[in-house]
Amino acid sequence: MRIGEAAAAAGTTPRALRLYEARGLLRPPPRTLSGQREYGPAEVARVRVIRDLLALGLTLDDLRRRAHHLDLLVQDPPRSCTSGSGEFSDVVAGRLAVLDAEIARLTHLRQSLAAAARGPGDAPVPPTVPDGSDVTPEPER
Image 1: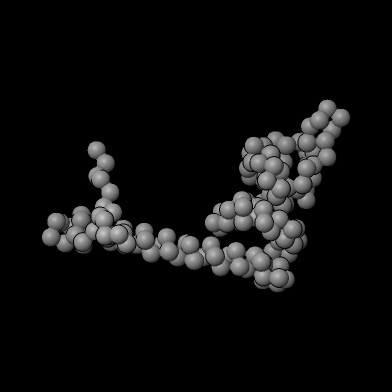
Image 2: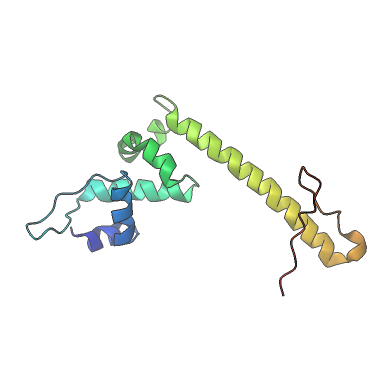
């Protein structure tokens, strides 16, 4: 199938397929005599795995460094995510730590906003950065 059909089947855009190819996540597909890319079901399945991993918070660089594992994930996602050298497990653990830190930051921000909405006497003291300077953002106008 041509790039537009493959992109639609994978739930993405032709531009994304070209990006994945340029980043080494997708092997260059065979081309027709007129130079158009031709994709098969295996490439569509790989793109779906790439999209799923990106949706989970991994980056293109994370995937590029472990592109050789993507075929394993296409073949058997549940088993291969936890087996082997643990490279993907390490990446996932790192992303989980980043997400946990972001959740904590956003939770604190939400609590601060909720307190501010209740009234000026209930608002917590704004956080400071290590050098002691105020990190309270200017209100939008």
